[in-house]
Image (tube, rainbow, N blue to C red; front, side):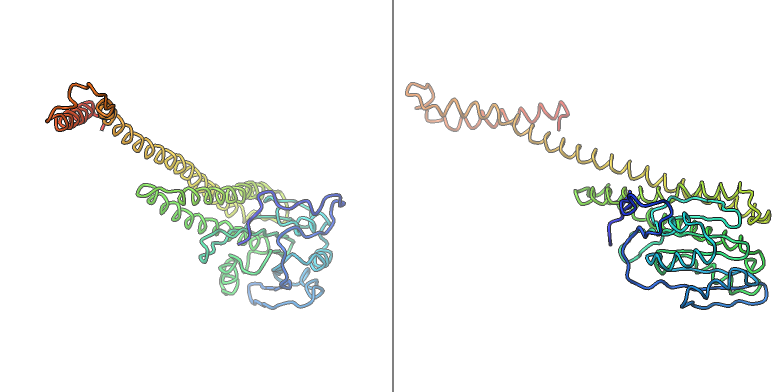
Length: 356
């Protein structure tokens, strides 16, 4: 999996005029896929679009139109679609720059929203981050994703349900539903991350090693990316709740308050996991320090016991001619007895002092 840059890759735009349509993100070769869902209380029509121009008719079509674009790496396609819907050049620039911070901008006849979508990849046990840009018009919603695959499946299923609330509450409720699905995806990723942290916590208690330290650092890096994605969404939800745009009806107030509450809850969980990782790192360092201290303690005790033995062996290893015990028959055995007695006495003394 490609390593995600914390600061993005904004150097591509150096020196260009504001509003220049330049793609900033991971290189992709797959063609851009456009799908349209048009619905009202009575009918639902879903279809794929081959030509960008075919999307323009849905700007003023009856009912609500959801135009989803999978892939923003083709600047020409994004620019043509944006111009057809009358989007500002700065909006086009932000759609193509996939390292935007979550935000809400009011352009009068439409709202522009940016959020970070998180999906959990069971294959490698990692979080997959992706920028989603939304444009909310009077009766349409444009959504721009970096690649196919999203968390909007439940929203599509509700649209296909005849008596679903989403079928009668307009485009603003659709935009809210998409944001709500994104925030719900945060909880899935947070739960999976919590399971990983709990597993490492158990391993930390039983058998800490250097590989475990690398896992902790890896999870901390993922936590930074998670924090970078989740925190700004709270500001986005709060801005939506306070917005005075005629595109957002009063019937959404309760839903937007609920969305804001969910973002706060996700932030609390993310911060808790971040604190747990910091605590685990401190625990690991303390554990390794204690292990080193235990090793040094054992070595020190062994060295302390052998110091007097080394002294005795050194004295009787000098081999001077007139040493008093050198010709004594029981001298060798006596020296060994003294050395063993000294060693035993040292062990008893150290135990009484509770040094071991």
